[in-house]
Length: 194
Image (cartoon, rainbow, N blue to C red):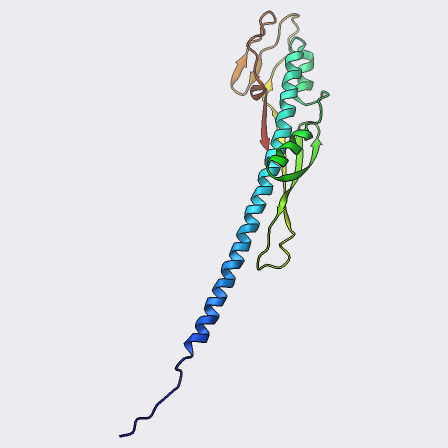
């Protein structure tokens, strides 16, 4: 009896296997590139958020210092709480915090009570299977707002300071004893707008 050899599809799986493994490796590198870009983008957003908040908090502290300086003249309080007083531009704090987060920042004060920051990472996304990413840097935007927390009503009585209500706390101010004054965090809230 003579046996007949049949070759048919023998050995056809190996090229398919190589093609599938090559495709999976390409997808893995592509996902890695997307991950690199996401990490870089998150770094830019962190830098922008920190920079905007730092500038706003510095201005908040200056406004609180101005309020303490003028605490005995309640006619000036409203202007202080609404940012209608002369305080220094605090963008230098934004630049400082962006640098600490390995980024550069463009800061613009938006009177009376906010700071807008655009940050760009110093590091690139890096080389990957996605062409053109090796020189790309991530950018992000943040706006921090200073919100006054206190209300008061001016009284006609001379020498009497109005009661200051900040959120749910009332401050009865005694002109003869100004040791227990609200702090900057009691007078103003600082938060990101977007």
